[in-house]
Each structure stands twice: as structure tokens, then as C-alpha cells.
Image 1 (cartoon, rainbow, N blue to C red):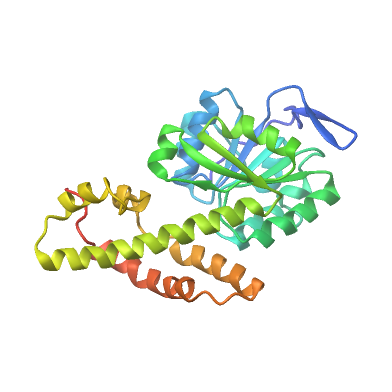
Image 2 (cartoon, rainbow, N blue to C red):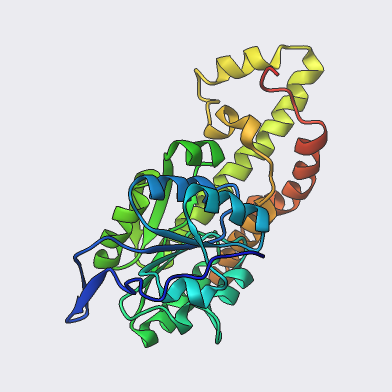
Length: 298
């Protein structure tokens, strides 16, 4: 993958440390790992707000797109972190988060003291808690920062971020995330952001499965589904899942339900609906891709 090395003379930290708190005096230097469909508009908005952005992605095509926007392309996670004060993770899975953060070439191997790693991937709460333990040993911080809504909201800079972390870390995170989020909610400590994202997605997939089944019933009656959708959006059947039906792909649904299932198992909870949805999303992905109910007009 062709890339530009980060400049050796770039400032390594955008603030100063005093008595365990973060005193920010100049703008963050942002690094982002994972610039796919969601990461690209995030980069666009951060650049538009004047943030210097370095990016890393396994896809040469994704890298080329953000390079054309004005981002610097890093060669690896360590070099990206070396010249960043604020690193955003946008990779897909827990093992990928661990891979880019840990080890001799990971983010924590070179992120300067006082730097922040913001985990915007959807992962298990325990994953971000373990990263926080590693960060503490290096004098760095973790911001638990999964994001909600979707690619169309990302394009408009209107994502929702669910923060978990210390107040001073959250304060720094708000400044960066406000470039591409219209709403930010601070839910508590590290881990609570991922709890909120997991439960948000549980409710999304419960509703989305219901929309497939309701749609099949409706189709059997000959009713006009788009007209029915319009009516339901005026009543108690209204939901974000119904409003955004065209965006729903179930691509990440199984991973989401595995995370929620792990939380339930850890708490010793018997949740039959949650267990059923975990199985149902497997078929739902195939249905949505091949022959979904026609809730919207084409």
C-alpha cells in the first residue's frame, strides 16, 4: 500500500499534563484507524474543522480516498500514534481493536503520555476496560466512544456518540467528535459507552426482525406497504428502524448480538428474546439482501 510517512517534526502532543489531569492548550492532532464507509465522512468533517488528520486502513482504496481529502496516510499503527495526540479506532471487531493497540507496533507502543485512544468500534465493554488498564500503564487514556445512526448521518456530520470515560478525557473528546457528531451523551465510566451501544443495537434488531415479520403479514393481505409505513409512522408503530428501513443491512447484527449475549451470560441472565434474536438475525441478513418486505417505494 502506498503511503506517506508522518513528518518527524510534527508535535507529538496537543496539550500538557498537570497533576494527573489534561490541560489542553492547542488543537489535537488526530489519527484514525479504519476509514471505511463511516470513517471517510468523519475524516472529511474533521479536516473541514481544521484538524490535522493521519489515517490508516488495510484498504488501499480507502486510504486513497482520504488522502485525496487531505489526510496523511500512515504506514502502521505505531507511526500514526507517534505523531498523534488523539487516536480514533474505527475497525470492525474486538480482535482488530486489540491488534492495532497492543504489541510492539501497536498504538500504545508509541502514543505519547497524555494521548487518548477513542474506541468508536462497537466492541464488548470488557475490551475497552482492558485497554484502559494498558493505557494507564503508559500514561495515556481511553475514551469509550461508540457511534450510532448510520452512513447517511455520517455524511451530514450528525452522528451520535455514546461516551464512557473520565470527565477531562470526555471534555477533550467532545471537541473532536463535535466535528462529525450532532449529539454526544456521556453515560459514565469506560465500558458504559459500549453497554449503551449494545443495548441500542439490541432494540434495533428486535424491531428490525419485527418489521420483516410484520411486512410478510402485510404482504399477504395485499395492502400497500409504503402507505402502511406512512400510517405507522404516525402511530405507536413508529420506530427509527422503520424510518431507516432502506439503510438496514443486518451486516453487523450477529456481532452485536454476540456482544449483548456475552453481557447477559456474564450477568447470569436468562433472556429468551435476546437469544432468539441472535439466531434470527442470521436469516434476516439473507432476507434483507434478497427479498425484503417492500416498506418503501423504489
